[in-house]
Length: 628
Image (cartoon, rainbow, N blue to C red; front, side):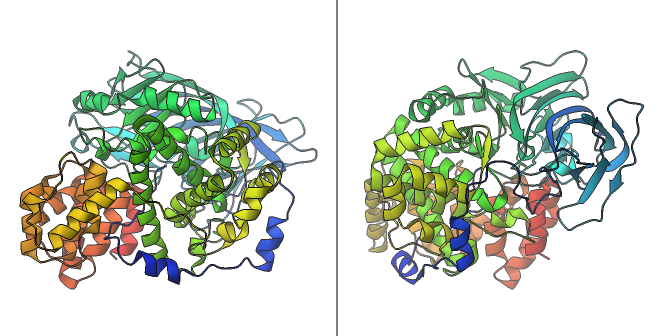
């Protein structure tokens, strides 16, 4: 998943922030954790799951579901193949908001006396199923409620085609339990198959082997033969078509969007080949992507075999396809080797950001990747400033007990994780580092990984890097480590000269901006002063057309500045953007900026009242709190 919470603001005070970012020394308990022997199985208990996999673990899931748009429910069965330890007498599953109708074991006629535990905020309720020594399969008959947090039910009017409804899921981090009774922990992996019944005019797709055309029955069968954690369960149902862009890659989208999407993602096959050159063979067969309606709350979601993507990356010039590289990179870091708990989220995202930029460097050159590196570092600096340099949320290894794991999603996991890996690479050199990463992905393929186990492996394989890079401070420390690398970009230095020239009085139209990429324009906007007059903003807008930009990243950054400076001509575009786009990282920053003044807060509430039905629960759970 691409980071949903980067902060769009001018990149000011960098040196001050770095100087002020005191590094937290590891506590005694953290040092002890670092010396813990690596875990070799499923014995670590996930605080965000009721499951007890050391007693009974799910190894395969077989779903039979009917999709009902009229009632906004999924209904059917989940048959779970169970591996139980000797003497285990209970299988514990995660549920949230599910209506459990019946549970059977080892056959349809053998009903068992299941029990639901008490409701726990954001975790839901445990489902206890009795086991006997002979139990191999358990079947749960159930249905979802219309408020299932993972499910986004869209009316025809909320789609590009305006003719048919649409459904998609978002299971990460712990929302799979709102549509499937399952052991919803990233440390528990299982294979799955599914039979899904949908209206005949729609196509169903999952994170599995997928059809490329609709059939006449509306019944679709799926199989995922590689073991995955529950957060990678995914379902999409809508009026979509398919276009191949390579021998192993293709794009699904609504017919009105398909041609544009196929053009935008035409280089996916090249990205896949570049990734394989760096870190080895792709393990999942096909790599396809579906462009979802605008309410999708993230940039992308790395569901195996079928990345879910936001239409906000359809810029028309392939300038935002690093997001595709990010989700593709997850096929190794995250999907292949998975964080064991959400406290270890940085292991997924830090490696993925690093790998994403290696893919972009392979395809477009070092100067291109350097721009991405600087933009990401800007987001990291702003995040540390937002949290405070001594906040425990600036540590890589988190402690999220008692908190929704979404609270751990920030630029720390993504960009500080990437900066840590860059530091390790700088110590040993790229060739040795690449050899280590290849070996890491191979040694732990289709397994879960926690921070302590990774550090043990790093210390064994790269002892010089472990010692030189001050690993404890990087992983358990707060703020910026003193040895953090500061990325630079020559292309951005040229942008900064143009910004300086404008500040000194050069008219916007006379600035040297020829052949700038979207990244250079984004950097230009970020470098503008925090405070500008409406006249200054109007001159910039007239010269460069920022308010009418088709690039969502640039537009969001410009709109943030427009709100901060009361630039009224951009407000119609702001309202349109907030009503039509559901991507959480844009929404949170813009609504938060609006809310800083009384009149802005009233505007924010009015827009939100209109826009909220278009947003996924992942977004509304944050925005409801922000705008209450």
